[in-house]
Length: 115
Length: 111
Image (cartoon, each protein chain N blue to C red):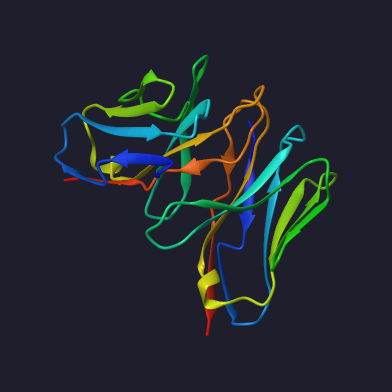
């Protein structure tokens, strides 16, 4: 069984469009994350979210917004896509035990290309 | 906030040699230090981690050391093999704060 899954795996779209990436985890974890990995392989944290708290990296443009319909899902919505948004986006989850930081399980990634 | 520096950015070794990757962190309250391996085109996966109550941890050919006083930790890989070639990321975290990753080290093991 896939622990953390993302859809789609590839996403090609034009500038100005709005798109969403879906993420689901079946590990029963309390916390989910979104990361952006650019061409230099840098893993930039975008959001950290559990059922009580959303932590936003202040450098993330407000065109990006996480939406969590339930504990097992954290979707990423991106409005008005720009060329610089092209990257691989990883979803991840971890077990939050009394706020402790534990191993993160990553999804397979979504390669977003904005033309 | 936390700042994690990772060196070197690229490391090239011959098969059988040892490889060492070093990271420093700025927040003395950080208490969890994982290392992730990302093979080409794959997702990052945890290979080893250490918490601040221990100074060293070993798992077969890989080991991690932690110096809390100096605020640095290192990944050691012995008897490197071509399948060790990947990008390695260190990270530092605590509580519910957003974890901070290093910029990654590309390890190349030549047969």
